[in-house]
Length: 197
Length: 197
DNA sequence: CCTATTTCTAGACGCCGCGTCTCGATAATG
DNA sequence: CATTATCGAGACGCGGCGTCTAGAAATAGG
Image 1 (cartoon, rainbow over the protein chains, first blue to last red):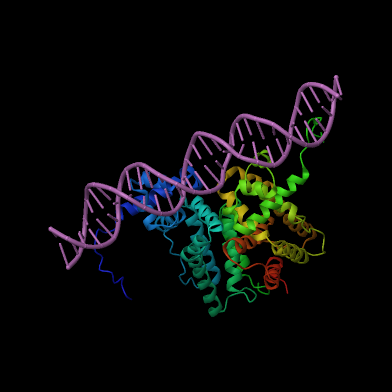
Image 2: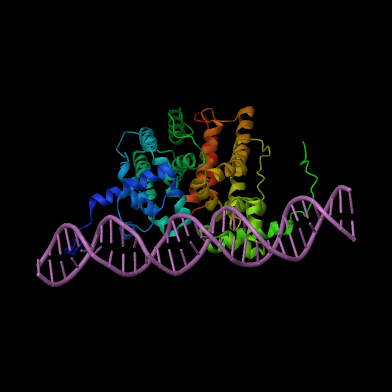
């Protein structure tokens, strides 16, 4: 599709500076917490000007959102595993692995918090993160439905709400992350047919 | 146990002012959003001095937390309904009703967001709200276990995580609240025995 | 009644980050 | 070499934060 038709005159954006800003924002969030992060502080640590940050990102939350995408590989395993149960298991392990990446949890907390106070960022967060993850999971449910091993009462929307609800509630309201037992229990709960076994 | 032994000299705290501040904070949050609420604004609308607010509450989030407790009756129905399924149903309807109270959703969003950025408030929010609600639900699961109609693979902790996870995820990440279909589906999912029927 | 104590409204104060703006230098294009 | 866009650096006004002071009002004990 149509590349940006602008022939790009003038100086080009510095990729090095971009990465320095993303890294600075990520590290500062871990060190002083999101509330303690200031755009000035990010710029200073990155060796950049404040204007450079404001030129490319609307808020410090947007910087962090991009830093998260850079830090953690956000592609989700939606590969066909043969059964709904196996794919739910794979998805949960994938999510647990992401949460185990150092810094991801505090960054996720900060982003969800900011999404509550800034309506514009809320939409960018939904489009750039939440709905992507959700769509991946719903793919799994849709395939299960086609395959025929999806529990009848379970809609794709509710299954996604339950899975992401569990993950986010753990992150936001508790200190506990996903363990083996959680994955096993959720996998069983979602894939059980009332009448089977 | 030991009442506050202080014989209470001097002028007493004005209950009228307290209520005016709580109401002002609640209303302002709805009108301009939590980010737009300032302590000065709350004091001004309440006809109070800024110092009076700071004397009794640590942050504007604490004011809102108390306002929420005042606004919505937070007692949860944990009455014995005869079966686990019926009690889960009652609990979900109770929660849906709370969310339907005007202003409760934006206030909940604000409080959870603030709990992510302020560690001290996070603990007060957990103690004063989250764990109370959670304990109520776990009572229901414990009774089901005693009664013998709790699904074997379902622990009280996971059941609570799933239920509150769903509710909070809906509030924080979507615009959808709990409907009849959600309540029915969750009730069935949690109370189903793999082998029954 | 008088004094001590506490809360009350009102507002001044310094501090700091926000977001905008200006500046001169530096790359990239034609 | 002229144009254009980015770069680092930092000044600027604005507004809220949290503290502080001042004087009035309420409550208790002596």
